Length: 324
Image (cartoon, rainbow, N blue to C red; front, top):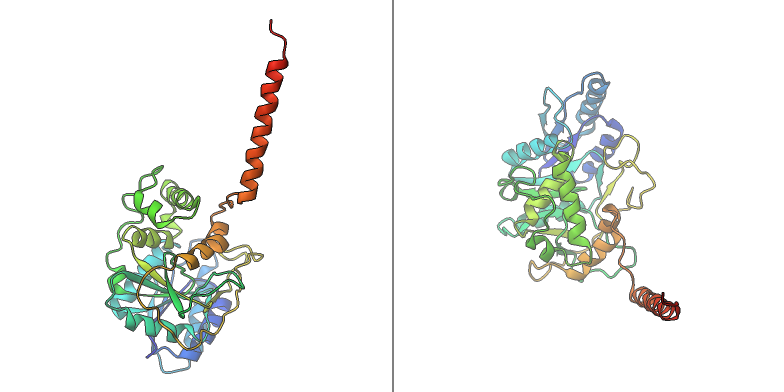
């Protein structure tokens, strides 16, 4: 059975039209819609009305529409958090799409299967739609793997995973890398890169315009896992000047093609796939966090030889210099 869907929208009817068209393939029986409130002094109200009309006229299959439209603008942090809480309070579980995340035909069936299979598995917090393995990289033998990364360009979850969400990054200490983060992120420089991102989130008050960092920290600090498909099932079409965080249309991750997942082969047990996660870190999150790659072994050897040459030169120079 197709699960309920939450669509988080604001003022981009052209993107919403693409999402609704994609949903027509799976025909969810219940569609929750969140449209954030207008900002003063903008054309938001007219754009919101266009979004509302696009959804109401585009849903042409048997579907119960549920609406949440706050009277004032909540912003990109509190708005989605409020929408997800409302959705999961009513539906219990389901798929969450923002207005620039277009699901391929395999995503909702995949999410439905995993929602049912792992409903009572507290270690699993989310089913992701995105796959950020590089082209040509080896795939897991199963149809999905358990990852340490929550990809939120189209995802699904349960009320039991979201219910205990606390204040964004509650208890985070700026300048400190906790032991659980070092253990979770073994790649060179990764724990420090995520700690800098969390520091910035707290120091700059980013909770008002980012919601998913808080979800990531909440799950990571509790040791939870995220299901990631071995093929990309959702594409983000929102890389343009109107995007809030995805503005560079030259990004290699803009408009990624969706791929067929094929017959589902389940992993034997919910254990993280270290190799797939290492490839994802190196290809995607290192780029997102602007974390430079560590030098390769031959580069380290060349730097070491260079230091030895300099040290030898300085020693020879010091011995040949006349003493006063």
